[in-house]
Image 1 (cartoon, rainbow, N blue to C red):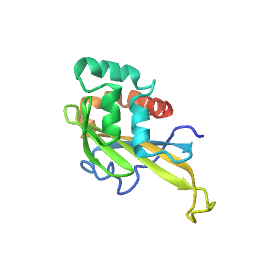
Image 2: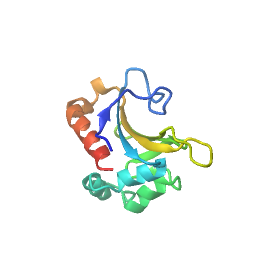
Image 3: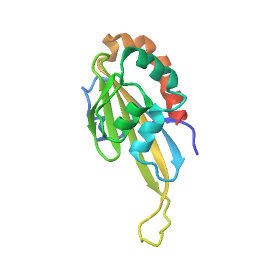
Length: 162
């Protein structure tokens, strides 16, 4: 439906409230037709072809990097996937932290109504805005600063692959 675009981190999102005010945060979104739940989005992201090389590499380091582990985190059955652990989640957002790297990943799914009214009387979901964002603690003093350009490209590629 649309290309991946950068955006401001949504106010009061789990990502905006995480860490300190000087930490690095980025956010990207793409719109997809119909209603997509957060669990479907997260599972699709971590089991996508775009994420496969990273998942295989992570599988060499940790035992929790399989498609089954990704599905368990996406569906709220587990709080661990590869290097990440769930910090917080609700119906529309999930924040996962990798404490060893001082980074976090954030996913959000926002249904957008198209204005039509189905027989139930509520507005129909026309599309879903899928968000993917990152947090890095104290970027200017971390080793991640030199990878920022590659990180931006990779984030967009991963979200495009969903």
